[in-house]
Image 1 (cartoon, rainbow, N blue to C red):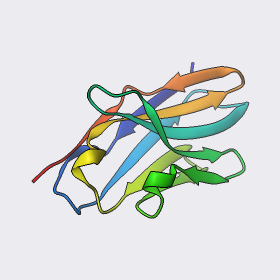
Image 2 (cartoon, rainbow, N blue to C red):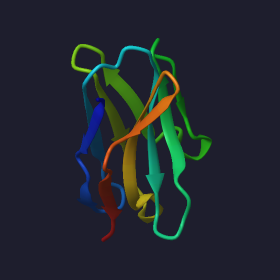
Image 3 (spheres, one colour):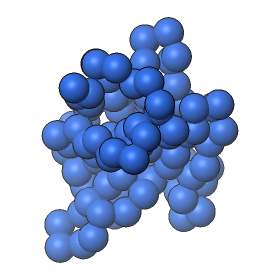
Image 4 (cartoon, rainbow, N blue to C red):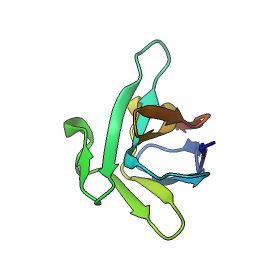
Length: 115
């Protein structure tokens, strides 16, 4: 059974930075990609960034230049570096893994951007 565990969320002032981590456990054989999503209160969950098995990355256009996804293959950990945070970045951030035809989700980590 694959498990994803996010960490690194918290309260940060506007303009600050956070780095989220997503650790995986269990077999990830057949992994196609991993991703970060976020869901703000009253809004739909949206994709933030993805990284494929081969390491190719893609970031939502509105977040390019501020958010960066990366991966440590040795530890099966995926990171989301978030810089120049804005109040509108406040959301629960979820880690996602597509393995074969199954989607796996972490429990989410709260990010709050406020002065």
